[in-house]
Image 1 (tube, rainbow, N blue to C red):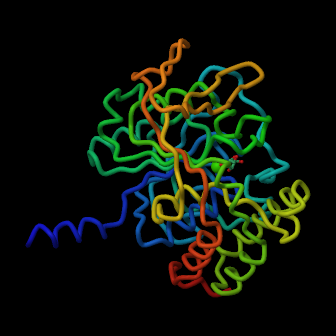
Image 2: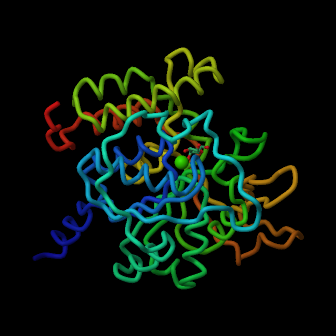
Length: 343
Ligand code: BDR
Ligand code: CA
């Protein structure tokens, strides 16, 4: 085989991804996008507390994969923040069960992998050095713990593409903080300073992607499948929250697509503009969870913590939202689901 054809084959190989998640309604839509997209090979789902307890997140990850006919390992991760007490889950956004109060569920058939989420990340990184991409879309405690278990992890991981934080757009839990980072700022600072290739997909771009509720009605009508029915139900609850909060989102009875944008960045980076710089997290006080970006190149600051020991990350600043929405819809409309059981 020529080196050119080898290169071509490598570039068309799907990316091996571990999805670190707190499902969560937008986590569920991102999961189904990842399962449907041919450029992504989900090799594991690692759960964390966040939108729900970690136990509920694990139940939901198992259920969503069961509904969609996928037998991917699911592990249970951290139950609380790194260095502060946990907060109650935001049931008013994602429902008591994290999936918009689904009601009666099909009997559970899947079992979790017995390893912790952090141990699973380490095991997979050691087994596939340089091949695994981490896509975390919740608080970052599993990644922080994995870094403690294996200090060489940044050299073993191909890339981290996370949903969280913000550079210019106002926060969604305080004027400056985004929820995932605010929920565990100490873990987040460890992740931003670990030294792996890291891209932050934050509110700067996720607040540009408004997904109308009707999109999910169309997807459900197209597939007539329990997986897309569940997603439609969950999104209706979530869209109520966002529609009541933001008039321009309410105009389409829609919601922000937060978590799915991390996967869209992975498969369609050309849709984004970005900025490179060092990123740190405020761990306490009034600015808790703020992602602070050094936007002045290599300018020296007297404040320690911004020197060469702090790695340069990439932050997404704009996205072609129409193209991202079309990619989302086309991917979810593709024939990615097994035949629905007759009912
Ligand atoms: C993030 O917080 C969670 O509510 C969502 O799932 C998303 O990951 C948005 O701030
Ligand atoms: Ca999430």
